[in-house]
Length: 167
Image (cartoon, rainbow, N blue to C red; front, side, top):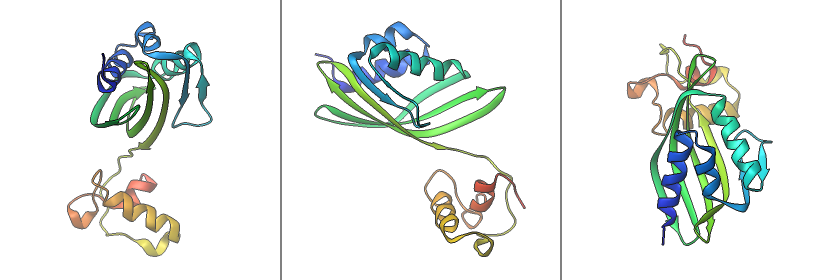
């Protein structure tokens, strides 16, 4: 019997190969997919396969790489990094996919993504006074979440991270 981890690894490999037949072969007939870019959602094997391949075809030079994974019973969580080019511009996302399995097939894939923006280093540390309170919390979390670091931690300022420009 194929484990849920093996199914997910095969699914990732099929996406990296842009192989619609292999993607479809790992999905249940009644599969459900929710993209991180809502309102994109699809039901049924053919529609889920089409939605996934459309998303992949919009990018060039892409790779989906598993970072961590966890499986329990008929559920799985897969943390991944997606790197690609779209319109010649590099993009990178860090995300988590929730999977549900039944009878050796994927019945649900729900994606959550954090888009990573690159910015010039800032000369100041957390200029929070000019940001709304909600944005201050978001930038502090972004600056210290392990994916990016603040200037005091030898990285770039979270405000530059969120605004996309350095000071």
